[in-house]
Image (cartoon, rainbow, N blue to C red):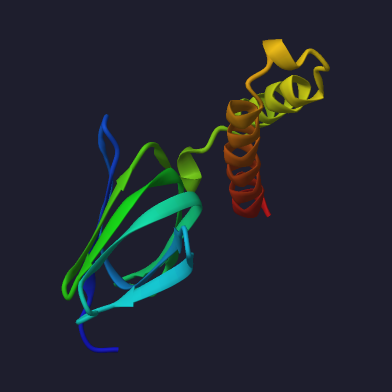
Length: 138
């Protein structure tokens, strides 16, 4: 493939990824989308999931994102994420603990004490992080 596209993934705290990519795949709220060099510009919201891309050497890379926004330009994809972690930075034990805490909250019977929407969101984020970390370990 001729050409590459710049990928930047940014959270409020830091720049997580700044890399050249052959293709970028991301979890849009309306479905997964892919961006190649010279793509038509657009902007969309992201859901919890995994951004995966092929770097300029052809290596597959994976980054967990917990929502945010993506802007695609002909030569650049910018992701503004609430939080993001590269696959190698995911702490499996921390992710499993978060998943267990969320499962316990959802199992509680006292509806007034549990914010189910937040607990479901926490469970979804933890499950994605665990799946990604398991992929790294296999």
